[in-house]
Length: 288
Image 1 (cartoon, rainbow, N blue to C red):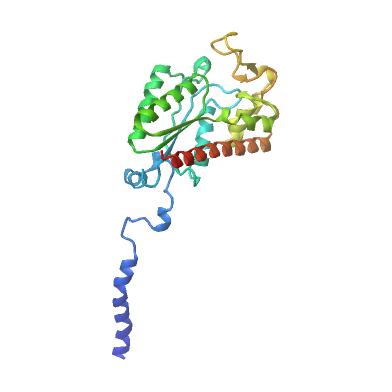
Image 2 (image 1 turned 45 degrees about the vertical axis):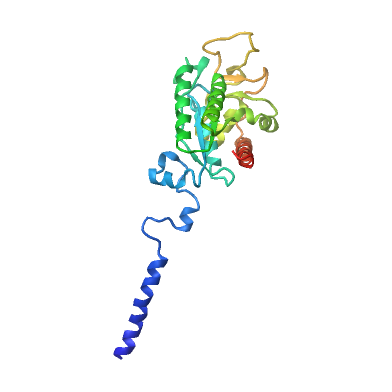
């Protein structure tokens, strides 16, 4: 009986070294855990995690930018809400595989700045800050810097210029995406009109992200909108309406249809995803 009891014990002792070798060391990610980062948000990563992933396994960062300004019956931060939602929707796509940098919520607001709750950053200050920020993303060894912009006006040109200079001087790849312009064909296809700032397109996009951000009961109709003037025709500060139209006579919000809003959101995100993924692929093929 003593020998029979000892035999299983000997087997267990002999098997222990093999089992110990099979177990990962403490703190070592398992194969499953290593397949994707724990989070895509740079803000939530530990510095040791960041070092494990960049640049060996993640070479791309998405930086979202916007501003605070009036948007008709949508939230003042619509220019922030939209790019952040897009970034989170596309970052883990296999063809993109990006981390998301903390959002920049203030920008060159311009003629909408006098409205309650709006914030305007002077161009010189914005240029200096954004240049320093892109330099830092390059220093952190990101190869591809994707900027998803939610605000138009002077900010679009400033971002393009800064991104170009950083790409040439730091040897990185940059892409600036102004989502509403990229999605102009989507807007026409879904709504049959060009839309506008806080128009049917942008309002629908925000509604799809979070319908509580659109105050439908405050909407009184087309009288809340003003068409953008032809270049050199006139200018006003503050701009007379918080809804601006790309073309006179069309583009304002209508029935706030949730199904249509959801469709628009999906198609816009698809358009941005295809542009970003396709650009990254072409950069790699070209050796950048």
